[in-house]
Image (cartoon, rainbow, N blue to C red; front, top):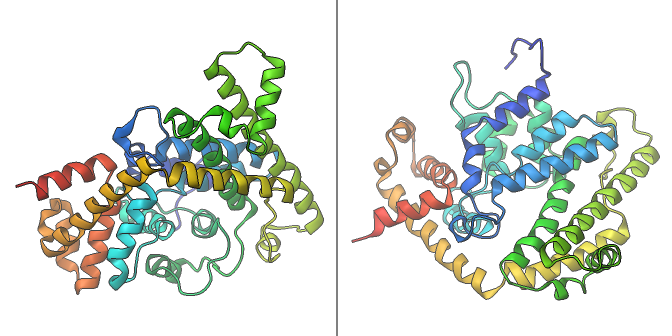
Length: 363
C-alpha cells in the first residue's frame, strides 16, 4: 500500500531496514545452515550466511553500478522462509504438507513479508516495494509451471511477472548466495574435520589460492594459511562475476530494468570456466560434507522432530501460543489449518523446535 515518503531514506532503504527488524530475520541466528544450531558456536547460521550474502551482493552491485539498496534488501530476505534444520527440515515439512499444497522456503519468505510479520498498524507484513517482492520471488530465475500455493496467493495480489527474469539486482543477490555458501562451507567443513586442507587443495580454484598463499607467506600457521587461501577463493568468484556480468550487460544493450527482465536470459553470471570449476567444488562438498555420515545421522534425527511436531499441532492446534488462536479459529478447513501449522513450525528456530519436541513427546 502507498506510504508517505521519508525525507532521509529511499523506499529500498526502508525495505532493507524492515527486513532487518523483522522477527523472522532475528530468528535466523538460531537456524541451521549445515550444522544444527547447538553443534558449535563458530559454524555459520542462516543469519550469518544472509549477512555474508548481503556483503558480497553490495560489492558486486557497486562494481556494476546497480542499485545496491534493493540488492542488499533481497539478499538479506532471501532465506527468511527457511525452516529449522535447513533443507532437512524443509524436506520433512514439504512431505507432511503435500496433501495441503506442499512447502517451499522461497514462497514462505514471500508469505512472511506480506502476511506473517504483524507489527505495523496499517498493514500485515512489511509493505515492501514491488521490486523487492519480485526479487525475493524470482531471484533464482523465472517461476514457471504450477506455483507453490503461498507464492500464487501473493502473486494474485501483486502480479510479480513471474514468467520473466528478475532485475539485475536480484540476480546479483542469487549469485552472491552461491559465492557465500561455496566459500564458507569449505571453511566450516574444515572446522568440523569432515575433510582436510590437503584434500581441498586438489580442487580447482582452491589449490591455486593455497599455492599463492604458500609462495607469499611460506611459514604461515595453519589457521592463517587457511583463511588467506579461502579469502582468495572468495575474491576469484566475486571478480569473475563482476567481469562476466559487466560484459553481458554491455552486450545486451539493455537500457532499462524492464529490458533486463525480458532479455530471456540472466545477465549476472559466472564465466563458463569458473562455473565448471564450481561444479567440481559443489560435488566435493555434497559428498564429503552434506552427505557425510555424521551430518546424515543428525539429519535423520531432526527430520523426526518435524515429523512428530506436525501431527501434534494439526490434531491439537491450541497447543500453539495464544496469539495464533485467532488464525486457528478462522481456519475454514483442514488445509487452512495445516498451513497455519506449517507457518508456525517453519518459523521455529532449531533450539525451539528441539525444546518443543521434548516438551510435547516426553512421557
